[in-house]
Image (cartoon, rainbow, N blue to C red):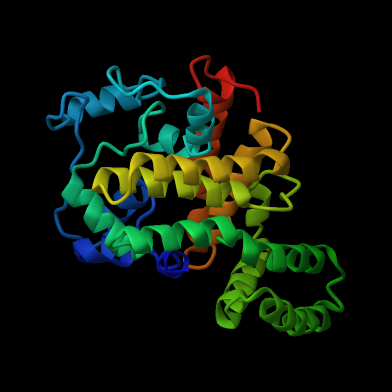
Length: 307
């Protein structure tokens, strides 16, 4: 749950490395934050396959090749591992992460700092705790309570909107308690998601909205374990077992990779709504391009294996 709480703060109001790492989720977040007044000069360290610093021009060339990052000398993966890693493919496509290796290509010190600040993970025990939180609840627990009520309110008559909103808040309290959710967080999610609907931001999202945003939580879990492996906190087998659990949960929840990708995009918007409504449209475009690329490119992991 610590991870969810820390990710609810906007990255672009930061002025220190610790603040950035606590809040940024993707390189897009980093670029947005770096453009803010007063942001310090920070450069996240990345490695090439050979272990040296990746040159800026080489990185740009690869980003605009519209291909995928595949490690040439990576450890061969089993079919089950390929499938599990594909749950995090939206991040891999957006951030040019390896699609055939459980790594962000960060050095150990960078991974340790990111895990501590962004996820509250400082050792093997906390790594397991946050993993269990993503598998058991994640953001989808709040979404399941909030989204049906917001959609119903948004579709309903304007004349009784105030009464419906009041009834929703009362019902939210009861359901949040029943599900073991934090009351303040649940109310924040409800008000933010309702505001997103009122601002017309739902029009930017895949419709109909999914019943669950499990894809978002499972994609985050893969991203988490990329960093855990870079930080050398858990044995690879333990990370792969966690990812296998995520794959088993996701499989019956969606009908296709397209459904999974749409759910991921909506989940990210649900998270982002709590702190920067103005950014949802731009961010959604970015991640929808990533999912479209995964669905259309012949070398995409989503094209190379059936759901």
